[in-house]
Image (tube, rainbow, N blue to C red):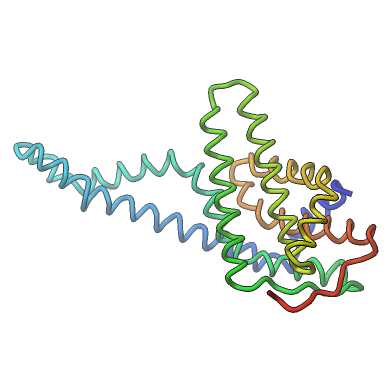
Amino acid sequence: MILSSARLALRDIVSPPFRSTLWKVLGLTAVVLVALWFSVRWLFAAVAIPFFADFAPDMPAWLDNAGAFAGIAAGIVLAFLMAFLIAPVSAIIAGLFLDDVAEAVERKDYADQPEGRALPLVRGMILSIKFFGIVILGNLIAFALLWVPLVNVGAFFVINGYLLGREYFQFACLRYRSEDQAAAMRSRNGGRIFIAGLVIAALLAIPIVNLLTPLFAAAMMVHLHQKLSRREGGVPQPGPAA
């Protein structure tokens, strides 16, 4: 069930119905990262360099080359931060398009089932921020345990597997169920959801490929939710949005 859901999700994210969403996420992520680069450069040029120049008034070379120094410094800083930033930034942007992914999966593979409802705007934004926080947390823990052999790898997969599995499955459930019903279903299938979360964490651990993680995770959990629902009698008719 989990492997088939993962296989279907991999097929989905490169299929034509998903490409427009994929390009939106990649394009907006690139725009945000470029904006961050220019922001860091401006911070060095307009704030950091004048601040330190006040402590060294007899060093005009610094001031003459401030712009070049700012660009180099910004590049160095972002080179170190890029691997850390790219996944969280793509996660929060992709969170805005998860309903598009879910709708495409449901219409393509589960047309015989009721179509889920999109999450309300505020609820969707909260979910997007939670996804962002989870990715940040997972990366921070992995970085903190970087020099502890095996422990860092295990902590990264266990923490991200649990959190990502929980939140993305919750997202798929909420398109059909209330908060309480979604929590109950998650509790009944905790083991499967955790293993599915480990699959998502594995994708998250691969640089560059992790840009696809949010879209893959949403598609995979929609498939898993549909499969589990069929075992329990089918997905319910979604009620009005809360």
